[in-house]
Length: 217
Image (cartoon, rainbow, N blue to C red; front, top):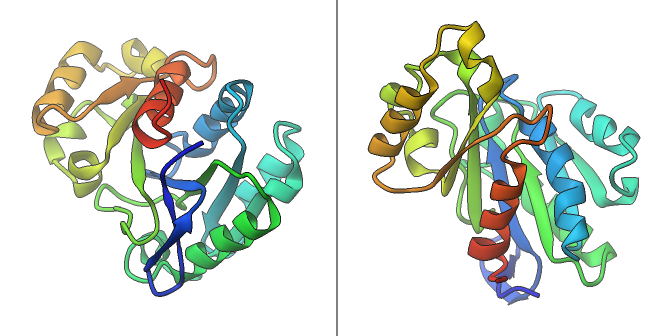
């Protein structure tokens, strides 16, 4: 279904296989909630997917997904980073590469692997040895000045997701101004406002994955 390449542990591209995307962002921004909303939307589009989660010293996010009933537990793998989360998605992503390779080997016909980083700061970015494309998630409750801080995650992500848009009036955020500033610092790279509690905006995220990553119409 896609033109992505799988990766060996040395980062070299091998035969075409499942596309790999990353989802990063600060603690509590809504990364796992976004994945929970994306799973049924992408599955309904005929996309076969699996998920790798990253936590510091637990498997909490993986267990949450396995218990959700949204996905076969065999399609979820957990990585315990044992260090700052960005270490295993950027500096040395071999643990995540191995986890994704194992999923791909055990699930023939897999189209997409979502790799969720543990919660990290605005400097968190993904190695392109690990993923083909990545999303950075922030939320309005963190303050409307986040885009102005110009963190690498905000600037470099292929898609910026601004979650919890419904909270803007309750936390004193001018959401239109936040959107304008985010668009300005990202110099035209796309962004989407979401409310992962209700699913608002999730279709737009799925559209971006389908079009930009899987090359679907």
